[in-house]
Image (cartoon, helix red, strand yellow):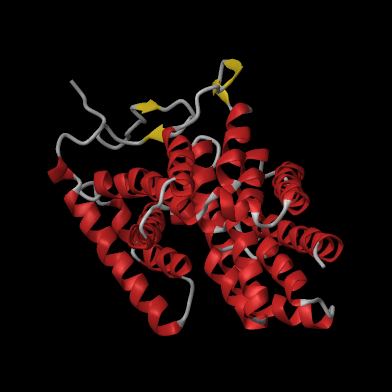
Length: 350
């Protein structure tokens, strides 16, 4: 009897087409090697981020890609898969601690509707552009969603929802690099643009909060303009973060259950429901500041760990084969988002 040891096939696929590359781990000990490597990579990324002022997500991805040669070690596979999937989804749930319904209401109904429309237009534009350029609507949705909502956190959430059958690891790595780089550029360039346009502090804050990708960069740019701009940018940006779950829910409705089924996926993944529940509890209950701070830090750490694991697992040959063309989708969505945010800020904010 001849055994084929050189080829491994996926064991199963979840509701959203996310291929399971290996059988479920038999015990927690099988997770330890991969988790240890993930933790060390995340700590290294944190050190680089603290000492050089670079985005943590970008550093985590770069460290993960530098350790990509470890991805072929079968002993690390279960732990890396656990970090890039389960830890990621728990982190997305904890992101709900960053937003409340009250903060969303503070921007006013007109601004909220405009912000929701901006997010929807940007995600749709990304899907259309991705399809037009031959990358597929799923990749365009991933790129547009990451730009429209909250950068790397949204990219990871959309990638988890879409599944590796629609968006592979190389494409996710490219989006993470592109959106982190675009966010870092926006943090320095967009405040200068608000001065050139002679916007008021509140208008500038709205534009920055509605257009910059990651939370930290949006707040940094806002407070660079002034305290009022920073406060407005924080509210607007957190409102965009809160729109992550509705956006995921809408996209999920259009995902087929399987290759042979044209029905819509009517059941939301647990991490989307968890995001809703945590955000609702954070809005309705007097959650201690210590819990919110701890939860936000845990979310940041878990997302960084998931990014590092994703970098280690990314197939470098596929990543290099993609080239720079997919980054055009991110750049185009970023420009569109900036234009829409600027117009809304001038029209709706005094």
